[in-house]
Length: 437
Image (cartoon, rainbow, N blue to C red; front, side, top):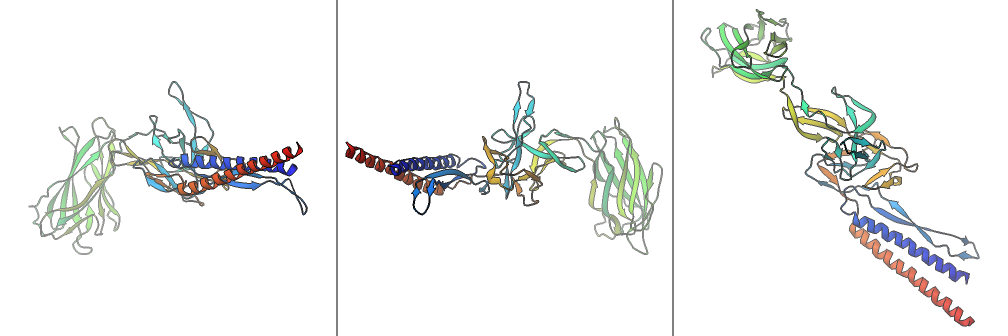
């Protein structure tokens, strides 16, 4: 009789275990399209009450979940630049937050971890995923220094890029050596430069051949108001005619500007001060190449009899407005401005665990650390075994539907077999009861 009652208990345990397995399968199938979802398998463990050479009492079975957090899902393109996926090991660090009635965002201070990378910018400039978790990152200073001592929610606040006054212009051109002196004046070469307020001004360089191997370059800078010229100067330039022929030999200083010392290999520069309306005075240099070197401005024969400008650049910028956000494989978050500049504001770390399958699942595709998982180890992407970040992509669920259906059929059949055991034992007990009667 004890064996029959033990068989009933074991069969009930079998039903419970297969119910747990069906539950895990159901969870997997319902999340087959959930971004970053990690499937849950089922392991079975036998229970032993008494087992020796003479006796084996039925103990039954126990089911427990087998987390599969280390299995990579497929990456699919999303078309959104802020969508992120990790290729390899690791998790994104995120943090829950609440937004109060006044619109102030309050953070919990409790770091969680996820592979759900469907991040978008909210109206406060935070990167938030579809489950409402805020992405954490290292702060990056304006000098590009990464502070990896702590993480904080990534927020875009620098939506405007301050203007940068022009300090240097670089000019490269060839002057036609074969034109007649005192009868050749070039077409002006022009470029926009910027004052400290970001106001554009036109600077022009015009070449006049004054003699054999000598030229004058007229520098004119408009004040930006269209009414006058802010700065004008004529700078004499001499080219080598014996050694290092065709390269700059000297430049003569004059009223309102200085020139660099004519030492071979040194930069050939003219420096002057600009005073624009409403802006502070700014010092500016024009770099014409190097003395005695065939870079920058040269004087060689040209059948077209024109000044051939190969490059005319400057380092100033107007004020810029936020244009887009970009994230590279090393996790650097850059704000791109419509003036052509970009600024790195944060770096997204990759968080690893020694036993990632022992993380505790929480709602929204996130996990919390446990004693069994070990402490989180933060690091830059692509370092110490951590994965890389792919922007514009999402990691699909790692659930394989075919496998889930196969396991479902097995669980169903085993469940039915355990139910049959209960029916059989019931019949046997009824037989014994009827015999006694």
